[in-house]
Amino acid sequence: MGDAPVADAPFGLLAELTHRCPLRCGYCSNPVDLVGRGDELDTAAWRSVFDQARALGVLQIHLSGGEPLARKDLPELVEHAAGLGCYVNLVTSGLGLTRERLAGLRGVDHVQLSVQDANEAGANRIAGVKAFEPKLRAAEAIRDAGLPLTVNVVLHRLNLDHVGEIVALAERMGADRLELANTQYYGWALRNRAALLPTKEQLARAGEVVAAAQATSAMEIVYVIADYHEAHPKPCMHGWGARQLTVAPDGAVLPCPAAGVIDGLGVENVRDRSLADIWHTSPAFTAFRGFDWMRDPCRSCARRELDFGGCRCQAFQLTGDAAATDPVCTLSPHRGVVDLILAGAAAEVEPAPVEHRTVVR
Amino acid sequence: MTGLDAVPRLRRGVKTAYDETRASHVVLFPEGVLVLNDTAAAVVGLCDGRTSVEGIARRLAEEFDGVEADDVAELVARLVARRVVDVDG
Image (cartoon, rainbow over all chains, first blue to last red; front, side, top):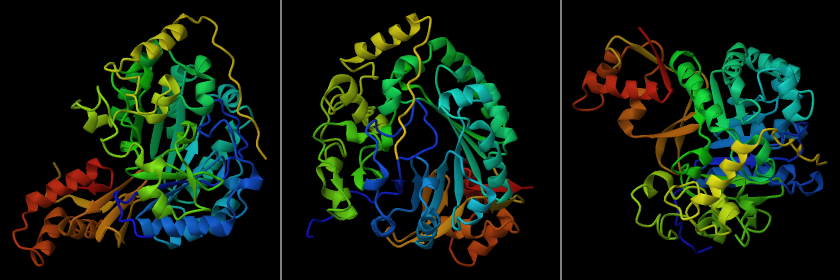
């Protein structure tokens, strides 16, 4: 106690309830070191996390994973989050999301359903399991329950050429929103980068298809750019420790789902300290909050208010220094690292095979 | 620009709430939160699918000074752009 709050209140909590998942996608956003069931927070601990998050100012709780349906206590957690007045967003693979299961989840405001590709063979290949048909049934159940639906699709070399068909599939599924997010290279996706990185030509073609769909579709279509191919970095998390926090299955509290990769970040756990103390004062959250940590070229750059120096995890992964300018930026002295990776992908004739995420129990 | 006879309503999946942490009314939607000032909160509260923009302005004028229907229309247009409200008419 005693430390005055130093940061604005967060709006969102990404609650990674579990890393267990029936899918084995090669771009999974979970870390490569997955948390097993035995190390997951129990029901009472998650309820306390939600209570603390709401008291801290969180208004949106994203129940995610892994597959949140793998948690038997999901109905209770949904009800608890909704009871606090939070907007409850269920982020799911759709596997196991039957009408009965959905009816038991009282308090869900919105569902995000992942789709891997427009056709069954491609989708199942990326997911590593037969997931396509169950997802169609899940979408039907979501719509019949009257819940708003966002279809989430991670784009990469193997499905970018089908983006038009993916838009049509999302429309058939009755989505209100479609998120088309180019793969961001962390964790599993970084490991599979050679297989997933698209060519410039693929991105240009897909970009045109998406722009045309955005102009005509009744769905809201959000397009997340492929940052390696851009001249400036993404405004990652809208700034470090600014708007959202992640709680991992084992209670680790992170500024973003990938932040665990940064060596020596000083990640703390809700089992040891309150969420408010961690948000406001823990080294992991204060390290890159605001602008004081920046060096040039970011420090004196007008774009720092737009992109916050890009992504700290990406800077660490590609340069070994988390305080460096995101090497995606053409102003970064390390941009050559990214260009070399792109040149390697362009030269590949036969794409590398995708290594599927490991199964965790 | 939203017309004065347009009838706005909150979109499906959009919730309103009062946030004690920020002492503000807020709009919650799939991927975002809007923190509202008092006038905007009053407008959002009247996006009920029955009241026109002009009707909202009339109701607000009972409560606030200097309410212009055009200002309400502009605010509604911004809420439409953020996909928080839909308009009929």
